[in-house]
Image 1 (cartoon, helix red, strand yellow):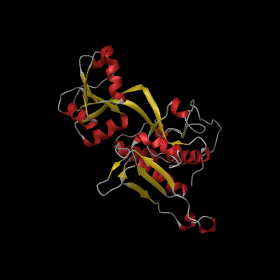
Image 2 (cartoon, helix red, strand yellow):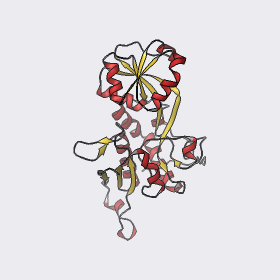
Image 3 (cartoon, one colour):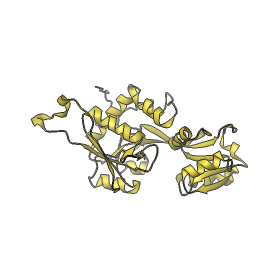
Image 4 (cartoon, one colour):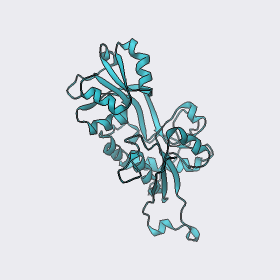
Length: 281
């Protein structure tokens, strides 16, 4: 566990703060990978900030609960959740069939998919065939590196690896490569910080849900958090938060604007198809 932790206590009316017997509501305990901008990253004055920090601080506020959000290594988050240290994870976690066998997930609040970033003024990519004869930059050892190495010969491009995604972005801006490949949110965030970078073609078959995981025995809390997420989709606040951090207005059919039926990710283990009415305060 890193030495710094974010303790966020949401301002609540006294009537909400006081439970029966004047007991204060227990804080929700959660965690993020505090090095994954723009989802969670260090603040200059200490603690962490980012899309996921803002999102689940607001979720907790609407539930009438304080929340603590620790910053820790991503590899240790799920073991800590299963050990009971956390109630759920605020970190973005890709929902896969394997993970859904062992964890309960909310529905997706974002889609994650592979996306290219190109230099401003460059020729847009309309299909993977447009990469033939070009060089792309990737973060060494990432899922995007693995995809690029696997598909380079098929589509006729070359791959240059860098120690970080910002280094890969700079390779595009300086003209060393034609494009960089990364996650859609990191590419879009990089473009808000680097005016010469433009988010471009996405590989739709890589699309998956980013959702909040819970222990398998905690369906009640999963459902309560999902209800709030659906309310935020309904009133547009989740889409507004996404646009604030990623610099792009979500499309009408993006996850930020889509309340999925039931609880969880349809078609995956842990999904509960029971219809429910969204109740928003």
